[in-house]
Image 1 (cartoon, one colour):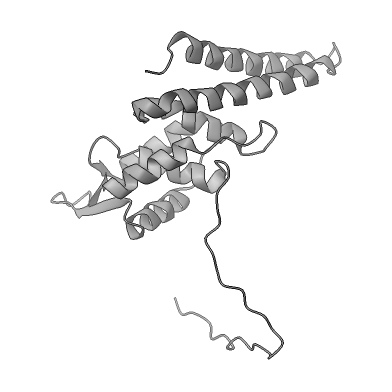
Image 2 (spheres, one colour):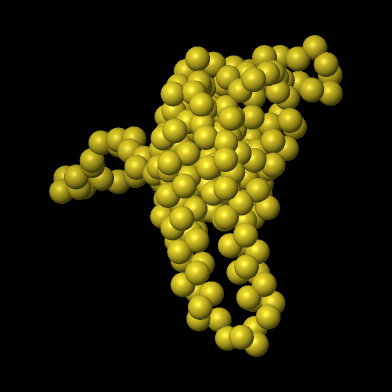
Length: 199
C-alpha cells in the first residue's frame, strides 16, 4: 500500500514548537491497562502471540475485549521498548515466542503500582479487573499496596452503585437485578481481598 504524498510541514517564524516529552502517568488508564495485561501474559513462561492475545482478553473480564490488532501493536511496542524479548520459533505454525525481560519486569511492577482511576471513570472497571486478576503475579512486597488500591476502588464503586440503585423505580425489575448483580460482584471482590490477605 502506497503512502500518499504529503506536503512538508510549514513552520512560520512565529511558531513555537515545544519539545515532545513522555506523558507522566498518574493512574492506570486504558493504554497502561492494556500494556499491563500484555506484560502479565508471558510473565512466567514463553508465550506465542495467540497465547498472549487470549490471556489479555481473559484478564480484562467480560466488558473489555481489545482487538487483535491493538494487542499486536502493544506487543510490538513492548518489544521495541525492551520489555518483551521476541524469539523466532522452530514451529512453523508459531513464528515467534515472547518472554518478559528484566526491564519488562520493572515496567510490569510500575504499572501494577499505578493507582486505579476513580470508579466513575469509563475505563476504571476494566483496569480494576486487570489489576485484580494479575495480583498473584505482583511482588510480595507490593501486594498490600495493590490490594489497598483495589479495595478503595471497589468501595467507591459500591457507594456509587448504592446511590444509583436508590433512584431506580421499583417497577424496573431488570435494571434493579442488573444493579444487584454488580453489587454482588463488588462484594465478592472485597470479600476475596479480605479473606486472602496479600503475603
